[in-house]
Image (cartoon, rainbow, N blue to C red; front, side):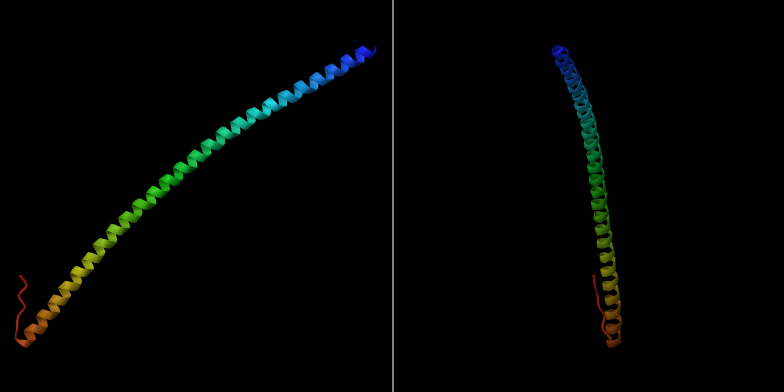
Length: 100
């Protein structure tokens, strides 16, 4: 009877070990899935960040070009108004300005 008690104890222990091993295997599988999903999410976020940074950089370049064009136009307008003002002042003095 002592042997059957030990045998039963060993069987119970083996069953507990098998259940524990199944649980560990399930946890490993879940862990692998979670890691896979996390990597996919991280890659997606990195791609979105990279795309947003590229769009921001492109927009900054466009704004810079627009600013340069606007400044050049303002300088042209300033030079034209200065030229007109000088022309009026010189005509008032009886002189002329010849810009060729």
